[in-house]
Length: 522
Image (cartoon, rainbow, N blue to C red; front, side, top):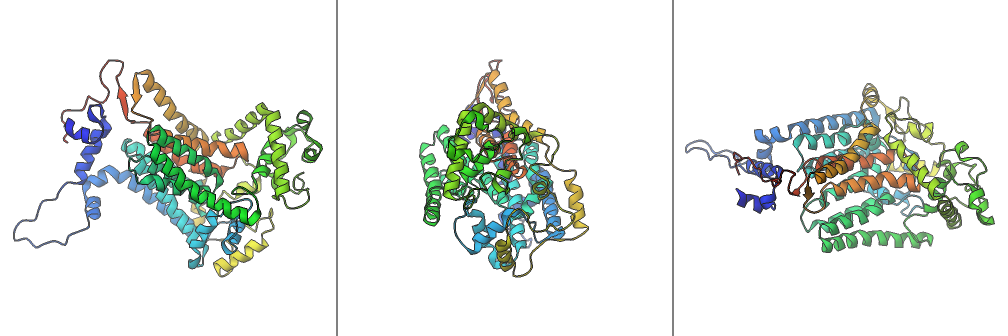
């Protein structure tokens, strides 16, 4: 028995989870008896079908299969109740890039290229259907990645991404978040494997995520550092090369189009808006050219950060030229840098206050009623966005759809989803508990004299979840849809922390993991 465990890579320091995995592998590979002589030959069935048909498969994965089926049914309701899609102000910008391939100043073109791949179907129903499939696939990835955890924990880890009503609504919106979510979870899942060939795939997935939403850029560093901690320095180099080549190439395309360095041209503008929640020009004492960006109102009377980007009353919007011109973005960047360096504690407090919105029990309206309404299944068809001049995007959308655009609400399916959304969601305190569970469990085990055999498996998804939650409030603003991509990673980290690979001795002096039951058949 110990020899078999050593071949599994754990030796005498293996744990009960390793024994369970060996047993399940034996169950999966069990050879069915040959038919007796004289009995009619049976058509050879595919191996995967035989494994699914076995009672053992349903015993191990039946609960997850049930959750997955419910998630698929809910997404079918969304397709039936809101045809063909739900619209967001950003949707029109993405569609313009589909037909006029050129790097946008505010958003990278990854999601537009995703929509371009689906253009031959000539309908936004194909986009929402693909996004719902990506949501289901994300749940499967979480379940597979948590294979070392108990079965109940694996299933629960996949529940939020499969059943949360706001996740399903986000998948039905024409925005980039669902694609970004899938790419990040896929990259993190691959990073947990031991296969050498996956490093390049991880890098390419992270590059695609970064070119879908730029918040994916720090995740390249996070997962490369994870491989270094696991003493896979060569693989970390492969990951960085695979990730940076597409990103740098896109940066070259952006420079050719706008004569500016970067992936987007709005970083300074968004950071300026973030600092306007606390910036005090009396304390900053900015030079004359920056003083035009000051807001004389006290911080407590100022609007949400996004208004400093889009509102006509914003000091930045009032400047000559478009808001995201190089001159305006550089000016906004200088102002924001001065605000952060002059008021570092105020900046930190502002970021924490925005981050705290993630963990509230309720779901208060923020940043305003208009944006908040886009995240709810509507009762009446939403009209065109009033915040942006979307006429050009609307014309291209009609070309994409090859017909009129809009959202048809079909009852009773839509009503069922609205009722479901009023009840089923992941409360903020639960997400906070999921984030706290892995480090707390690690601290408890360390106090008992147990140590990890290398970095714990939960560290990669946990760090990625934290980065995804903290970055938007730090450089832009809090938004409810920015929280959802971090949820499956937090759930995965919590599940992996339940049964980690450990080495060491417990307080009783007994080797951890050596108390393997004698009746376990290997």
